[in-house]
Length: 129
Length: 165
Image (tube, rainbow over all chains, first blue to last red; front, side, top):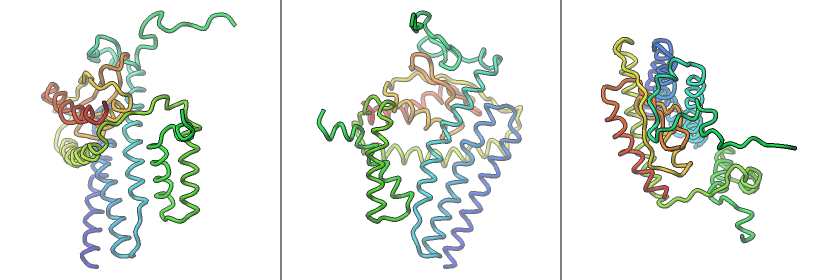
């Protein structure tokens, strides 16, 4: 019992440390693109540790198995990259200075966010009723 | 197409939905399982237009290996990013955009690669090119952009190419 409590406490402390670092990064880093790194990474291990602590607590101390934590992990891993991607796209769309300094794509084309009509004429306008 | 094929256009998706429902209910009884199966059949049918092709998996078992590699990298990434945030002054940061030329063509594979890049060391995938042939990635701090590209291609893209044909 004591060991389980120690493990839970250690996991909670690790988790809080990484969550705190994520928030510090959000405050400290200079611009939007670098700030995006803090919540997508420093926090995944933070949330992960807290969730594992929850699994250990319910399994070892309350004696029942809880699997909701696995689902939270799954949803987090699905949603965090998508959110970060959309925020980055919106930023590129709004910030001309950053958009102009982007490296060119490997195939010679443009980036999907910036080119609303990649190949002129490729997209046919609906004509007539 | 057979009756089973029409009822279950995406067997793997149906199985996943049923499993997620049972996990959400946090317990297994007949009612939960039945509702899970109904959802597993109904949702793929209702959203069929969004999934025109069934993604082909060549090596499903390699997915587990890929997952473990990514999980390990996420742990390493957290420590690295925490270290950068806590010790580097903003003036010493070298944030930069890099371009990853893609050899993957399956949309599901590219989506997985983009997600993996966002979750791992100091990189966030930011955009896809018009032709779907390259990925724009932002690095929090790197002295060697070409090395980061080579590392991503070797560690993740090569593995995904074995999973998706």
